[in-house]
Amino acid sequence: MTRELRDTSPDSSPDAAPSTFASLDPRTGTVLAEYPVTTDRDVAAAVERARGAARWWRAQGFRGRRDWLLEFKRAIASDADDLARTVSAETGKPYDDALLEVMLAVEHLDWAARNAKKILKPRRVSPGLVSANQSASVGYQPLGVIGVIGPWNYPVYTPMGSLAYALAAGNAIVFKPSELTPGVGKWFETKWNSLAPGQPVLQVVTGFGETGAALCRAGVDKVAFTGSSATARKVMAICAESLTPLVAECGGKDAMIVAEDADLDKAVESAAFGAFGNAGQTCVGVERIYVAEPVYRQFLDKFTSAVERVRPGGSDEDSYGPMTLPSQVDVVRNHIADALDKGARAVVGGIDSVHERFVDPVILTDVPEESSEVREETFGPTVVVNRVRDLEEGVERANSSAYGLGSSVFTRNRSRGREIAELLRAGMVSVNSVLGFVGVPSLPFGGIGESGFGRIHGADGLREFSRPKAVTVQRFPAPLKLLSLERSARDMKASAWLLKARHGR
Image: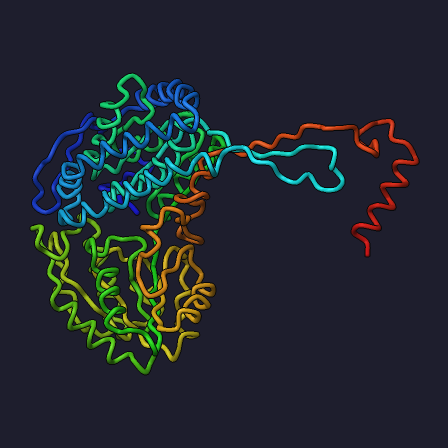
């Protein structure tokens, strides 16, 4: 999910609108580059260009789009080092983490390109007994132009869930990257233009929230938004002005449940990655851990030992980088303070772990469920570890959140793990791993409640950026003439008998 550099929600208005803005390295504050603040008029012009490009793109057909997107994929993969270094510079994350993000994004692009035809092409469906004289089919057509508003924490992987699937479905894109990572968005646009310079199927507009608002109002056929729940509400309000549909991926307060029979070493390794990878700035990471009472102390000891070896910093050798958004440091500090004030214990770190740019890892336990550290998204390298009686209580506490994005459960009994997964109120669940679903392109990605609605990835993601088209073709006259203003008494009597015989018994 994304956070705003200043008040960049789509309906905000700065005192003095700048014409350019700087992209900064969050590790040092160094200016990386300057980018234009795209005006409303220029956003509208980009959408108009995309409208023409969309007609060309649709005419390529499934096979043509597949070939173009696979070429795009190869171009990204062959230059992955440069893209990863751009991500690392703008987010502060270590190079290896940035490269992993690029790898996952490329997998999704490949899957979308190769599977769009199979999922979206017209297919025959049963007409049913009453309409047996009809041949029925359903297919999926492109929407036209998609406006994508992307995040800063995973500026390649997350928007690719919209870019790849919308393009594969036959749409053109106008992409507004986060103001913290404009260079990544421009990188994609430049790479596409190197392949098809005369066809602006993928355009990028840069700026703050006002640019996003302009994109929502520019006549796009759908908006794909990633960001906070609060900003999603503002985006929805703007889209409602023109009934523009929206898919929203918002935040999470993802829970991990550790059963009595769990492989604790595996659970600890996964918990450390989910909680502290990318400085905890992962909407489907791990923010709450509920551990069954019999193994609580053993898990906590192992987890503490593992996390004490974790170190943030500005080099590629460090465990994770800085807080990409400076203002998020205050949120992390306030959540820690609130938990401690309400009686929680800091097992690793504490208030002193919060520095100007970096936050050392923090483990809190015995955290009251009403604290902000449990109820609100922290989006930083802190994690709650609370004991529960058993899996059932773990599920109850996990489900008590207003969010419902991802979650995980650890147990050696895989059947029991699947049962627990069905009970968890979340869009995605991993059993014996964390974030297992992010690398599976065929699975849908999205949440419920405060975590948003709609889906990207997989078949659902392709259909999210399509409109279904139903077609019937009459093969022969209907035995009963019912769709007529001159229905006969005989046909109505037969129909009434058929209704009772078929459905009234």
